[in-house]
Amino acid sequence: MNTEDFHFFIRVADLGSISKAAKQENISVSVASQRIQRLEQSLNLRLFHRTTRKINLTEEGKTLLDHGRKWIDDFSNLKESLQAKDSRLIGTLKITASATFGIQILTPVIAEFSLRYPELKIHLDLNDQNIDLIEHGMDIAIRIGKLRDSSLVAKKLTQNKRLLCAAPEYLDRFGIPQTLQDLKQHRCILQQHEQGLTNIWNFISPKGESLSVVINGYFISNSGEAIRQASLKGLGISNHSVWHVEDDLKSGKLIQVLKDYPIEPTAIYAVIPERSLVPAKVQTFLSYLQNYFTNRYAWFEL
Image (cartoon, rainbow, N blue to C red; front, side, top):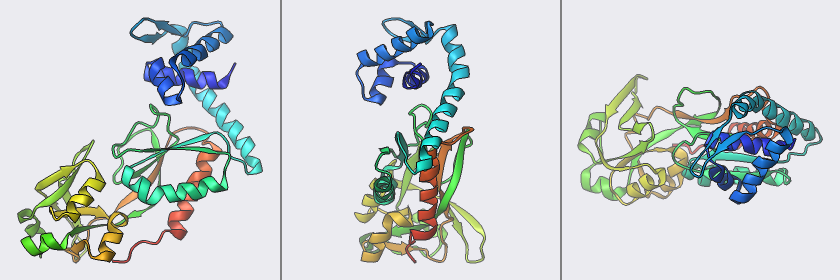
């Protein structure tokens, strides 16, 4: 039995569509259908009921999916682990991250890693909305902020410092807030996530107490970079990760406000699907990321 065909069978079953699975694999629908037919012939089983509009698993297909998913993952991971003993990483590592973090921070790190392991193909998906790792066949996701409860395994890479800032033009026009309550009178910029609108900003008082303020948004976007651009144009006060606006703060294009009330930091996580044997390519990349953020990444000093 061809293990690649078996992996493709799982992808089709998860997506409920041969055409969607073919698109993910960057192959034609006809080639995708041939792979399923080849697997059925090798097993002497019919795995899908096909109609012109949809496909459904047969009873045999359901049984094979239930029992075979873990087996094929363990087999593939074991194979990669054995091959990695000679310091070679092969196959494809699929990573997903937010567009802004991926471009600004992650891509240079991935480039260094890729040069070290040139036989490993890397697929980087940049998406400001968290995608389903299993459905999209991702090996690892980089997530920022609070994580939802799930069957995924999260490893903290580093703290994520945040701050409030605005363009000098905005502060000249509307004034500089002196207290947290002043924010209610200002034009603020908010981010819309799939979990909802981030209209509650959490602070730490000079006494170390946690304080929360409900913010009225005058500009809202689901893109962190769009929020930065709006802030640069003087549309209002925005809440940013330090890494995102570090250069703007250094150049004076943005100015930090309410320094005495720092934003509660979040964290940057590497998230992977739960499995009994983590592939060598994932283990190696995780170690590389942890080393980078622990020993090499220099946070901007406020």
